[in-house]
Length: 151
Image 1 (cartoon, rainbow, N blue to C red):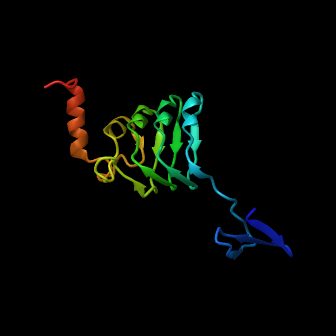
Image 2: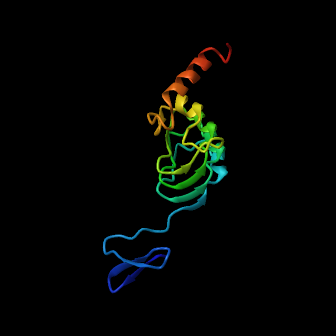
Image 3: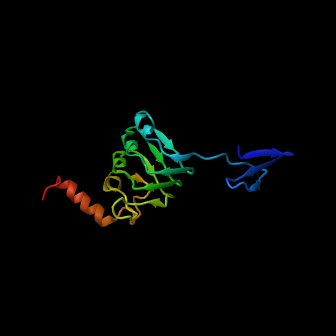
């Protein structure tokens, strides 16, 4: 436990062992480590909010199979890798990933989201960010889908 009471005052220690005097509140340890792929096996889940933690690693593509999800909040963690295109199946969800500065495209090492996510998920928090969802790429994708992938 990072919090202790000393003479009526709450004293918290950060991970480095530095005491933080705070008489109002004390933050408990956050969730740490990778997101379990097993979340994809919970078909009735409607909200998965693991924001503002210390989650690491890749976003498991299995999360894209959560057909009833309304809110997927992975924001403000230390996630890495690329955003899986499987999240494009979450068409009725708010998908929040902002604040994970290490997320990059797996091929180009640029900040870019999968086309399926930019085109299909209006609740994607980076939908209007041209770095993540470039408008010209999205228009080409729309044209391609309307042509059913044919010339």
